[in-house]
Amino acid sequence: MSRIRVWWQTLRPRTLPAAVGPVLLGQVMVVPGAFSWLTAVLCIVCALALQLAVNLANDLFDGLSGVDQADRLGPTRALQAGLLSASELRAGLILTLGTAVAAGLWLIAFGHWLLWILGALAVLAVLGYSGGRRPYANLALGEVAVWFFFGPVAVLGSLLAHRSPIGYEAVLASALVGLPVAAILVVNNLRDRHTDRRAGKLTLAVRLGDRRTRILFAALILGPLLPSLPVGLPAWTWMAWTALTLAALVLILQLRFRDGTALNPLLGRTALFSLLFALWLALRFLPATG
Image 1 (cartoon, one colour):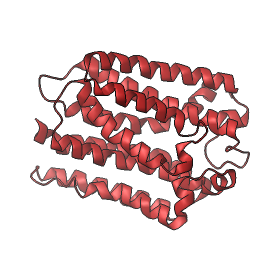
Image 2 (cartoon, rainbow, N blue to C red):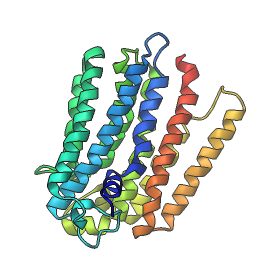
Image 3 (spheres, rainbow, N blue to C red):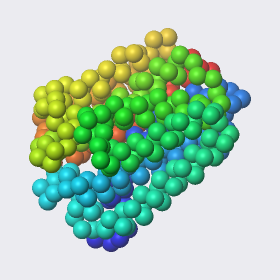
Image 4 (tube, helix red, strand yellow):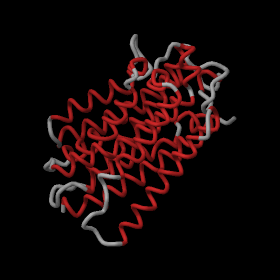
């Protein structure tokens, strides 16, 4: 396998739609007059770099801790498979995290002071999911963290970067958009529940068990669709909402009858659904904020 292909596989590009959607939603909710293209681009760069960094961090820390073994069911992990060394992964982590910090510092310099706190929390979240003495994945907090950073932090942080006012619609949208993103981690942890349990990694899927984890996935996918009904919008928007709802039902049915490696394709599909849902919210809430 070529080095470029190894790095591409290790960076997990299929997860990137999940990082882009919430930030795009935040950009379209900026009030007229406060929007800056430079700020918008840097918000997206920061989000993508953080997502790539967390992918590298999980590969590195799970490999070093022994969580990743030869019987791993998910996509190949570079360190466990011997495709990349720990020093190479550390260099990649420093580069991606450094890119996120550089973009974040620019945003902080011209944005709201609260971005200092959100930025620091984001960096700690990248390193703390699988790393450190007490990874928060072991505390079953992974899904909550994903919802928080891909929901309120991504959307409201985008508004703070533009120094745009935060209204009720933005708060509601930020709470909803992170839910399908958290569902991606639910799929990942459902697939890995047996190997994680054996390695002592007590994720939410390990604690909840098979049935309740699948119910949680359905709730995260379908739940946000109800508060985003296109009430008061043109009739054609009901077609878009119905199509999105049907896509959610397909994902739920696929998860219902799959397990193990058969769950791997659902990671990318759920990430794509999260992007589509973010675009739907942008359409749904843009008129209320304009």
